[in-house]
Image (cartoon, rainbow, N blue to C red; front, top):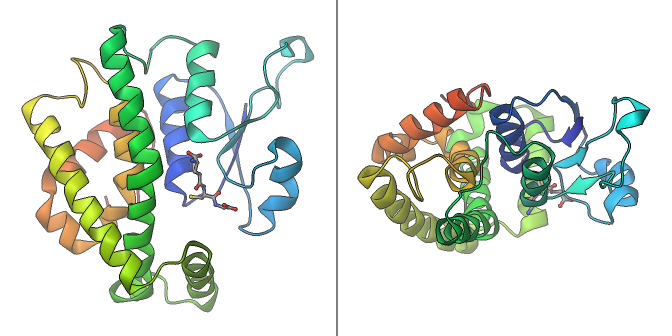
Length: 229
Ligand SMILES: N[C@@H](CCC(=O)N[C@@H](CS)C(=O)NCC(=O)O)C(=O)O
């Protein structure tokens, strides 16, 4: 399998965590932001990464009626569950599974975006010294413009993150897992999409339990720890 990715993207990290959890052999190809569109759009019609090419590098006999290219981390996990059901990231109890998928969607659509806003604001300001090179600062400015990251939107994202962390903390501190009594797509998604916060000192100080959890989940999924951990 081949995963097309941006090496620093937290959504691509989510796909890698799922592949690692299932111990599926795969290769990564890192694409250049902007130029990636030339390669990605013809394959799926979308411009976002991650993108999984399940049969790239596999024997021709593996070619089946399964899709040739899968865009979106949620669709990638759904595909991996069908391709290799064990160990499962989905829960056997239908109500708990519905809750896990709802949390995955909330984390993808709301919290992963809020993390991006807070992270790129930090990298442009207090965290500029992490990589003050011109090329890095240009990428940061392009991302800020692309997503409309400014003081007002970061303020909203910061509040959304605080509410999300209160809810996740309440669940994770009560039990080991966000839903049910075993690891699921909900835990994996939270660990991936909140991982950029590991570089921000305020979050490290205020939410130590979060980074313990992110570390444990990366170890479980055999994925190198995110920057800062
Ligand atoms: N819902 C998507 C979000 C993916 C996403 O936002 N990817 C960003 C990188 S973090 C991207 O590819 N941005 C480039 C673009 O939109 O052209 C998923 O879960 O895969």
